[in-house]
Length: 488
Image 1 (cartoon, one colour):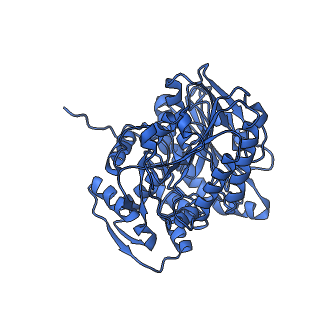
Image 2 (cartoon, rainbow, N blue to C red):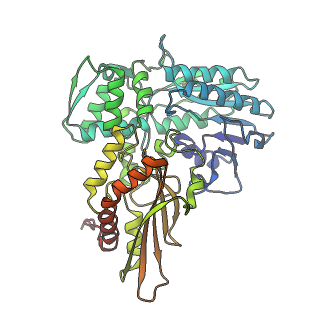
Image 3 (cartoon, helix red, strand yellow):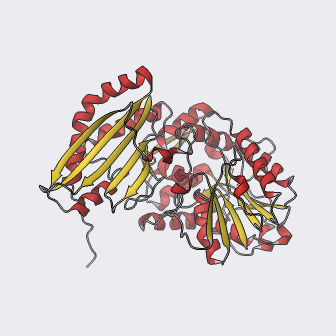
């Protein structure tokens, strides 16, 4: 079949694409910027990319008229102004209008379980999107899931952050709310299995794993699976806003997303029926089994996608890849040049390994302090880490940076700041091989200040830049990664 995938760059879409290709389908992948997408998928003759924006409607006229089915996998929950309801409704309306001009026979929409009477703003918004899609002339199949457990999923990463970092948790009452988690493998099985099933047209199905657990039980089961002793103290006085700040500081989620998640956690998300099993038979993984598979992917450094791949519109515009050309006018910069004799590939490997668990090589505690300060003011901080400790792709998150350009052949890495700043910032690493005395590591920090506060910020940070950036450049050349001991 010829299929349209919206949200093709997201956590679900990135994992769904290879499965659909294996089944022989032709795919039209809708993304807002193809530069962030082309490294993620096998660009075979069966994959066609279109750039379009569902919010503005720009580019939707590129959707082929002979599309036979479409996956709707987009959401706007991370909107910083809390206006995601209107944004999501507009996106769904523009999508429906565009699809009504095609020969599409089925729309598949992945959403949240909405069985409670009084729903959170997030779940109400998801239900409103469902209503918009159902008004289209194209029948919609709705798959409603609770939290999804898999390497790189937002739910898994939050559970992981909380449990790994806090031996004792002071938790609000929402941790006692019941939930029916489902593994990412089963979500993908349902998404592929429901395609072209006419008995599912115009219907909604709850999907979930076999376990019904409170969030507290999920935290403790995670701790048990990692051989960690953890204690949870329930308190009644943590308001939703305080809970959001707490989740924002401890985990990698930004405050806007934390607020939406905390509000939604008052709702029980439990399947009310299992009708989906009549169409797609098979047992789902347990929560423990889903955790085990997630750990396997992490240990193998084979995380296919992460919730962090999706842009948080509060920090970057969707056109952030346009910043790949660092401006020269109206900017200030700090440049370090070091000639070295060491093997170029070893230094490149050190550059490519920067951030995440390895850190920033020099005075790493100051980088962590800067990340904490960013978290306090509602920024992304450093808790996002990196998708993989050994590889980088354009568009990846790297602590409080986004990767703009990754070119090992040309020996260049360019990062763009996603932290809250009174301006824009770039950090570039480049190895110049033209010097006959030896290769030269050129490390450049560029800042385009926004008004007087931006300039004051830069000059206030200048003394730190002098020794931090020089020390980091020196360590990039000297650093020797620890060798893993081999089993005899």
